[in-house]
Amino acid sequence: QELQYYTDRSENVRADGSKLIIEARKEDFKGSNYTSCRLVTRGKAEWRYGRFEIRAKLPQGLGTWPAIWMLAARQHYGDEYWPHNGEIDIMEHVGYDPEVVHGTIHTEAYNHVKQTQKEGKVTVTGAQDDFHIYAVEWRKDKMDFLVDNKVYHSVTRDPKDDYKGWPFDQKFHLLMNIAVGGNWG
Image (cartoon, rainbow, N blue to C red; front, top):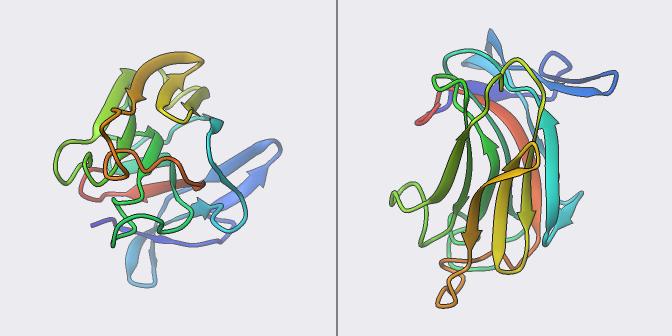
């Protein structure tokens, strides 16, 4: 239900000095009323475990839905890529809740469709006015979600979990985007 059309045009993604800018724009383009960009490292850079941090200033506006997230590099588990192979949301934000940031994992057992996702949220004063560091520290059996180097949410693997609850033993790739609208945005 998202309203944007993702492009690779400089109007939607560009470097400006030391900053990468992802810009959603209200414009008619290929049947959509908005354009934006989704950057994906799949096939270029993939990791298993580590600390991933991105310094970002979030967009303003009702309907904006920026995300810094990770998906499995390959379909290793189950018969569906998502949610069987997992998702790590390092940072998600929705414009109607301007100072709240979410860090979440989704798996076959724990996902938003079932309303069982493992989610933390934190108030980030000035998230749309200032740059903050959004991070996840991903280890074999635990993930910590941080803003400005402060842990606000942790998820620990339950020893009983198989891939349905913890598919995070494989390589993942990074995605960054701004959606417009959508089921949550």
